[in-house]
Length: 76
Image (cartoon, rainbow, N blue to C red; front, side):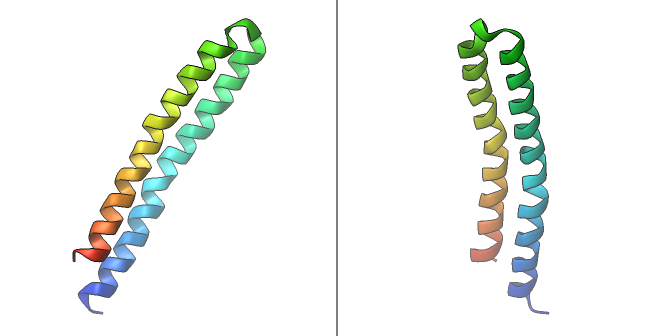
């Protein structure tokens, strides 16, 4: 197996493992936000704003994994 093939396989593993955490975090975050909005509908706007900020931070982790995968594919 040459280095290019190994880099592409490694990039696949990076994206697989690097996407599991953010996916679980976003699912948990949205679920808890919906529970909070169901309990206190008047605080829905504040909860929704905090939820979107949390989603952005969790999604940044997946974007870092994507950058590492691209580096593995195109630089190595």
